[in-house]
Length: 392
Ligand SMILES: Cc1ncc(COP(=O)(O)O)c(C=O)c1O
Image 1: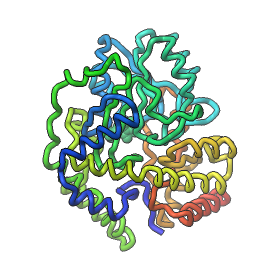
Image 2 (image 1 turned 45 degrees about the vertical axis):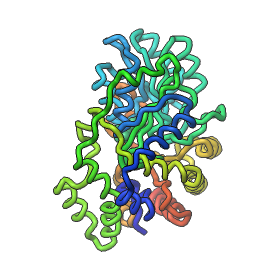
Image 3 (image 1 turned 30 degrees about the vertical axis):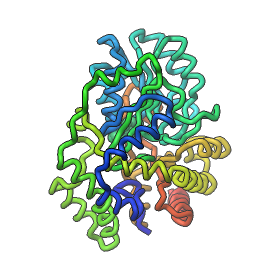
Image 4 (image 1 turned 135 degrees about the vertical axis):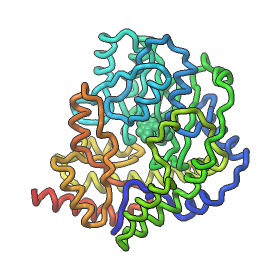
């Protein structure tokens, strides 16, 4: 068994070939825009990265200079940085006490009472788990705040009220970058849903094309990462990965230039369209795998009590399945010994002022749910974890 959480592990062979040979037809971008316009009911701008879509949103809003933007305390550094790049200050809201990876209406209300300069709120439905949208929306309406739904993790998630993510906010931002639900190697989009801001996107001017080297790296990424993963079986994966990095042939997600504005190449749009076409299959698969983890793993390492977790999984896009363990690095090593490489725990440097987010960031381990994880893999991973827990 050789299993990865990232490194292109969620691509299939058709996708690898598509990435290598997809044509650069303008109709792909037009079709992607059309799909997003209909799905999320608004005006669409495509960009090269999700973080650029966040910046573009803040630019369109034209907020007063000293505005603050409320965000989840447990989030990606790209969210922080894109807010700062747009000239504003992020305010981190802590996660709910009762478990869960989102902030609550209560913590939003409390923060608003202390900070009168918050103008907009970004919700992200972390790892696909839906937040309390009704409560948050009601507060945004009461305080006249703009609500931005960040769908980087949660395309296809349903809120507890039955509505799909991306159908409630004033703006929707999407990331189609590596390891997301809709993954076209790179990509992002912004949907303006609030009519007050329609046509404001036009005033931004055209976005320039990404540098050719970035495009080349994206083209080969699915194929090269396939080779890295395959070479792990022969003990050559790590050196090959290292070599590609050294040669600058793999995209670096920390690239500071990713915060500048670039357009989405047409062929990336064709990959995003391919992924939207298979979205339901993907979501059903992820849900099935996540439910296996809920059934087989003990309740004390799950995010919620079993029944509640089952319910949450049934709504979630299940980008990954979080568990929470002490001695996480030991479990990571144990899994690695069995060919399960899931050390990329994502958010480690989180907001120090949010104690729940800090605690979770030390204990969280995200189990894979992508299309290349079979039911047997999920059962084996659960077995390894259960054996490890007993040995502790
Ligand atoms: C919640 C969230 N929003 C936005 C982004 C930014 O996406 P991108 O890498 O496409 O800029 C990320 C990146 O992982 C993310 O996790």
